[in-house]
Amino acid sequence: MYTMNEIVVILSGGIDSTTLLWYLQAQGYILKEALTFNYGQRHSKELVSAKSVVKQFNDSFEQNLIHRIIDISTIKDLISAGSLTGDKSVPKDFYDKESQKTTIVPNRNAIMLSIAVGRAVTINARYVAYAAHASDYSVYPDCRPEFIDKFDEAMYLGNLWTPVNILAPFKTMSKTQVVTEGLKLNIPYELTWSCYEGKESPCLECGTCLERTEAFLENQKSDPSLTSEQWDKAQKLYRKHKSE
Ligand SMILES: [Zn+2]
Image (cartoon, rainbow, N blue to C red; front, side, top):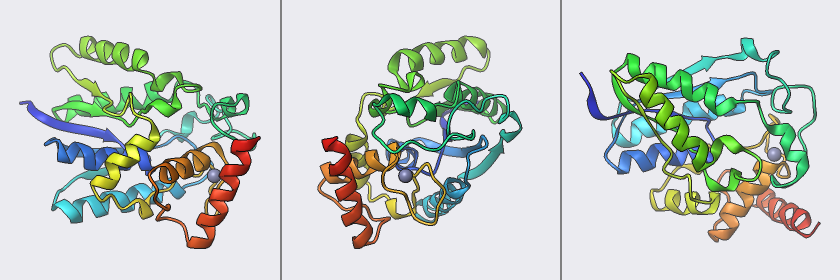
């Protein structure tokens, strides 16, 4: 039996997908499972973040959201064109630059969404949500509304007797707007991890670090995951790359 508002969420442990959990909870959805994919990332920092985010979510709302880490790293060698899984180094620059194309893992969202839809059918959840947002537009085609709408239709038709719909409530929002929503919901952003490099502290100048700094700056907030010294450095690096 379907429960109309039950949902499976794809959670990376970054700020967008963490915001998505709190956002959907506020909208009245019942969050059944959060799926974190280990697709052979070069580090496991984000897996650790995802775990603590789910724990905080369950503690805050007295919920029983189940967290599953899904290991798809066995396909790493087949889809390692991008710098997130392969041997290339992580480029230090904004997302809209040509260099950022190396951070694309081929067909990543379709792969993760397909598995999540299979899981949703299995546990009778009606929806799958992921945190695609508009700042990814320029390089990541699988975050665009055109992709989301067609994929939603395909998943619906492909599971017609037990239909599942794809939700991407941030698809027209910039990352800054996502953080604006999140700040209203008191999200523990200090638990989240964005950097593409898995060092002890974030590098502050890869595409995702720069985008994160921009989102907090434009909300006139400091990034709560950073010390004040790191935040000063993050702002300096942001201005440096912005002016290049
Ligand atoms: Zn970084």
